[in-house]
Length: 357
Image (cartoon, rainbow, N blue to C red; front, side, top):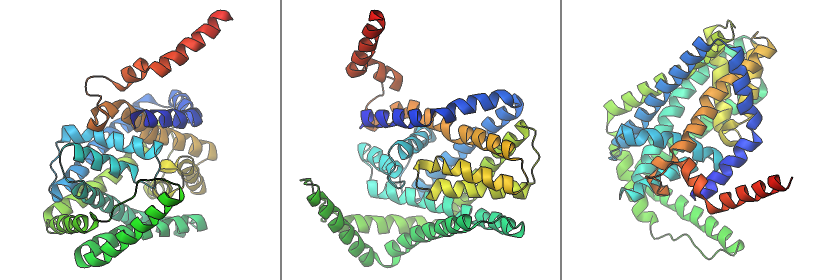
């Protein structure tokens, strides 16, 4: 699995290498002081973001130290990008890592669900104000309305999953059995011998219900989770504002929020991993519709995405060694790649061709 992820990472980077190169060129044109402040805001963002997951796992009875969880949040982003499965790769990483620690994967997934709900509900509140401002400025486009509605529906679906787990576990069990039947049909069509057994569904649903009820009973931690997520969104907005200042571009705070929320909507519900390509386009179009010069809007958006997406992506790549499931405790990712015999053979082959020339 480690080498599959590395292979996919190289594909992602090679396909979007111009974005990484553009980030470097953009930073050269900017005020380094404000870029440093934007990076500092992102550092605090990831610290608080990690705390939100720690609180979520605490709510379902899973204990994580901040030191353990911090690299996992970066790896979470990395695997969600290189293995796009509708956002399921990151939670699967947490669940698999928990299994290695003899923890309950069901409880971990309940914790991830709590974290996602906290993030999405608080974001929908900010999205509402951003959409209203765009409407008053006659800049709200049809595709933005559709994306916003899909965002609300996604949040409602996650909330419905919690309600079913607490109030109607029998209905949730029926849904899980139906899903397993569909998956087994696909396996049969593809001539895959492995089948998904349904014997674990009853126990899994029961464990999910217990974990969800335990989480909902902790009102103080729920309030803390919402507070942390509002702070997470604020830090992201502040980071974007510093990028505007880095390119000497003035913008109203409400316009800043409107462009930010529209970009994040397409990052979450976009058809590309982490909204690559879509987020940049939508943010630039939204800012330009609110009076920011087109050239500056593109420049600022690409720089902001470089800071908030590509840098964490590369950090997540490096921090894979901290994830127990890959068994890289005593070596770095770079060393593992360098020692790989297939990569060394390719390197020698290219060396031989170069010598002949």
